[in-house]
Length: 187
Ligand SMILES: [Zn+2]
Image (cartoon, rainbow, N blue to C red):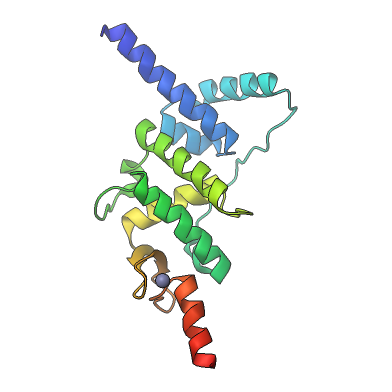
């Protein structure tokens, strides 16, 4: 493969990922970090995407990225959704092996970005009314890789993956096992 072809296909992958991220309403800063494209090229992509799509405006998120680990463990329902998303991320190879202290810097990349899109799309197909945004998904995988605020564990009864918040009481069971145990206690 000639160098120019190689560069062309790498650029192609970056653009493909950027378009996918735009569709998932990722912030410009997120798209820049994961694709390596400049803000100017991302803006041009936005414009061509909107022109092609025929829609007047896509919701743009310019503010701060979500920074709340507690979001993922707030209610049993969101814990369940988080477990689904995290499981798919592990299955599709989005997550690195082992703990990564500088995950914020080392995780982003075109290949992992494409796998993350794949995982996020699967999550949205699996969950009836998904509430985790793409930006939250990015936060989740980085937090899980750092393994400081949030970490992945296995349900002690059924071995399903669960996401545990280090600041709250340690959860040992997945939502389904927790419910069936409470049911047994009530009998
Ligand atoms: Zn379980």
